Image (tube, rainbow, N blue to C red; front, side, top):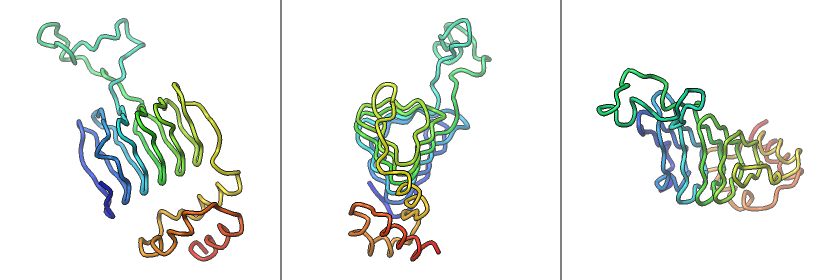
Length: 191
């Protein structure tokens, strides 16, 4: 459930921070990993059955991919083995990101603000701001806007404005952006 406040918590030894007004996080399935964090920005829309792996990577550079010490340690030994499961690092999801139903995001990925992750996408590499990706593995489909509009939106950073201002701008934010409109907003709020 969306909140005007930043949400913080711990899932499986991983720090999780969720920005204000993001919704759908209650449906997330997160597989944590010690020392790895998940950060989700403000105003994100997260569909059901979204999975984020902060770790859980099987070691493909070892003789076996079996996680000795992590599974059946009493029967098979190996409690002293470190480094399994592995992680590629933190997951950072920017602001105003739409994550479609059934998507999977793996450790070490950064998703830029304004990006769209299509339903059932498997995100294994970084996604640029305002990029739309889909598929398995997720691939570039297109950008939501041209380069100039994207740059102005990132300069505006509307999600960082006070809630009272965002409330006043809600109609404007729910319209197609033009260069003139965005330049005017940047001049008003970021000059």
